[in-house]
Image (tube, rainbow over all chains, first blue to last red; front, side):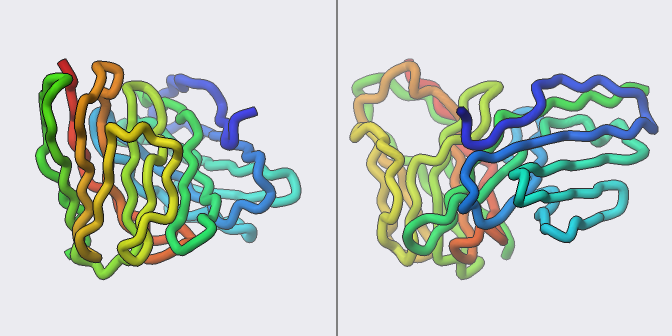
Length: 113
Length: 113
């Protein structure tokens, strides 16, 4: 079983649609959780951290369920510029200082006019 | 300065060559990382440095040799690479172990011929 698993993609949606990404992780000792976005041939960039209480940033809402080891990302009113690969990321804390980020395989999103 | 700078951006090397990838940050981060990313795959952790000491080596072949000369610099020395080592090599830094404040460089795209 992979340490971080995401929905297989790609997702092709029209502008204005609501899109949901799901992710599960296997290590219950995982410390922190993130969604990253990666554009084609670019580096991953942090989209948002994910907290147990749930958190929202504009059109983006992230949820974490530690009991189910489940993370989600909801994008409302999707824009053409949201087209990218979305990566679910879990920090398996290293035995010393220095986080150990484990990436899910990513889900490609394509928003069409 | 909130950037991680990687050089070179592109590198083509033969299997008998020796080359080095360089990474620099001036954010005062004490943890630095090397990741490898193949096309259509997520980044995979290679090495973690914390306070200039190697804290994680993810069973990386010895033809990859990391070095952290000081808290701002991270090198990856390459020797006798194989064509399958062709990939995007990403450097990152973070404030500490929890994974927050993780910043990626734009990467070095390496081709081994």
